[in-house]
Image (cartoon, rainbow, N blue to C red):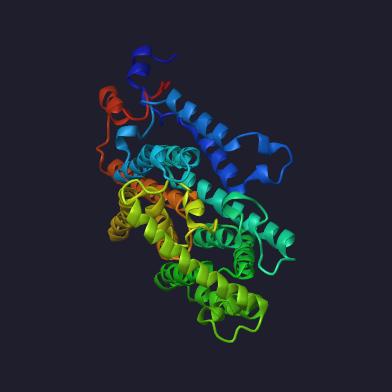
Length: 444
């Protein structure tokens, strides 16, 4: 029989138990509900607030283990404060809306869910595996929605979104596709199975085909920005010239065989030689957007501090249309202070990416994550000049992914630099943010 004293002296500390699995499960469920939108195509689910339920359960599960998690609320980065400030100001200004106070309050409450999702993402995504899982949910969902949209909306001149919400019109659908394409490329390059790689490759082709069918000019401009950036990271710097060749070949074929309506809509901008109905409609859309931008500038001049209220520009415009520029949208509805916080929030994403890109100790997988997220963010800030996407969650998710990735890299560095611990007291210091370590007796 082993000596009890020796057994006691031989105690070793196993890795701490992960107490956040439950919270991360419900966070993943929230991502599924938001990205797939099952309530729009499964009968009966529209009466159940699935997003609210999954978010609340994730918060409850996190609160139950608060104090024993790797990250805590005090570790939230500066960008989370910018986002919180935006939402609080939108709530504060809502009762002063000159258009519709009740609508401004309810829409701000709906948008406010993004803050809880953002905080939960940062607190719970503590490994690349978890980050990859959330990216997988977003990428797989948008790929699925793209295929469904082609099947259900092929009879329209411009492909319509098959689902509601973030996929409700061609521009929204195109924007969601472009913001997700670099993430699918990331999953393709990091997959170990050739079959899975082929699946992601087909998904990318289907999504690009869907984007061309939407004939979204804003989406195409966004694509032209984000894809070359992704090819620079993955093709040029990653030394994958075949990726560049394949992308150019597939893109050219798609332009020829599915880009007819898109070409007509671009040619209609000049207002000359309007031969087809599509060109006439596109030119009218272009003129209307100019009017809406001027109307937004008028609203900003009249209500520079409090804005019109979340979502109230459509009524104020007199055309029941959104202004097709995200920066004007957030400024006219939230006021200049909210617009400043909005810009600071996304600029913090670029600042964090610069920190990551300057590091020389990133492993190949983390480097691929940086390239994909940089492509997404740059594509968004440019594409936002041509689309009303101030309240879509995907851009905010991108910043959350970046913040979590930077935290993961810093934590890895701290673990490498930490000295080896040999007694219980020092072990408790290392695991102070994880919960108490488990004692495992060694029987000799």
